[in-house]
Image (tube, rainbow, N blue to C red; front, side):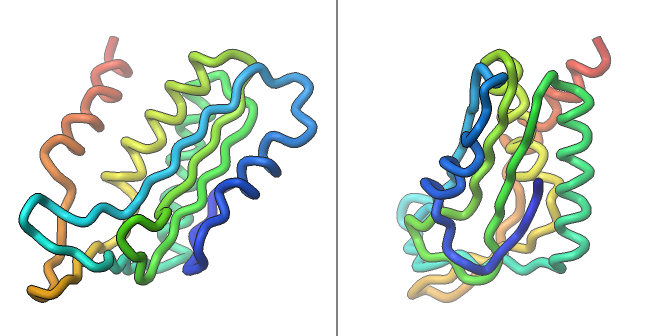
Length: 153
């Protein structure tokens, strides 16, 4: 399941609900992304993410479908915030359930690499020195490429 929200995330509640009644599951891997304070020397008070909720969720669902096809997983949950998110606050929660841990780890890693680069969010760091729009880093694109290489093998 994929959703985006402007509400704060309660990852404990999300994880508890996701794990409930999973008697055929051998592993649940989860990831929580936090808003960073910015690059060294750059003060950031908050990150504002803009999105078109219906469109953004649709793209994230496509990525989820790709992960389900690629990895032997039982279930996926991803909740991503949009709007203003303070430094240190949770911005994304991803959980993957699978019969075996390797599939759960790989699917979670794949999802985060894809979401980070392909999900249509526009990000603006805001702080005492003003605001600036940010783009995916070169490392984010390299992380995405490693999955393309695996598909070609």
